[in-house]
Length: 153
Image 1 (cartoon, rainbow, N blue to C red):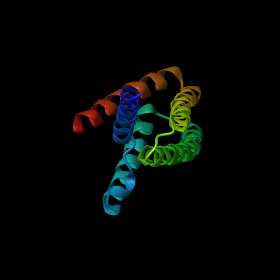
Image 2 (image 1 turned 180 degrees about the vertical axis):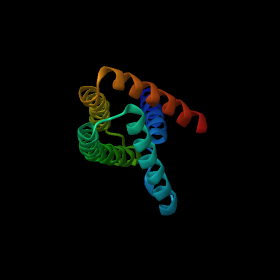
Image 3 (image 1 turned 135 degrees about the vertical axis):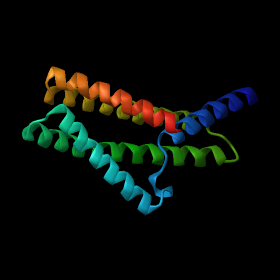
């Protein structure tokens, strides 16, 4: 029984550590630095639009899609944070209720799956909006940017 508790705690701890690195809270970043990031993201987006030679209609639909997806993801990330807080609280109880811990962990995994599904649907929406050639350029550029971002860590 003790080994099971230790194993469950270790799994949960690893989940928290890996997910927290993935979803770092923006509140810890100074406001002035966030504004700089926002401006850089906007400039980068405009540069990408220019490189892809998008029409005004494509830009409009992409911006609408981005806004909608961002709001939906915000809700999902909040749900994930809420589930983590509940799980942390449950783990601090003197007596562990494994049924409840497993239930909360299952709910947390469900939210993470929803996030992954939302990412995929976002990419599929972009593919519908862009031409085949534009989408290839888009994916190449995203891979480049992703690699640059990982190298900064």
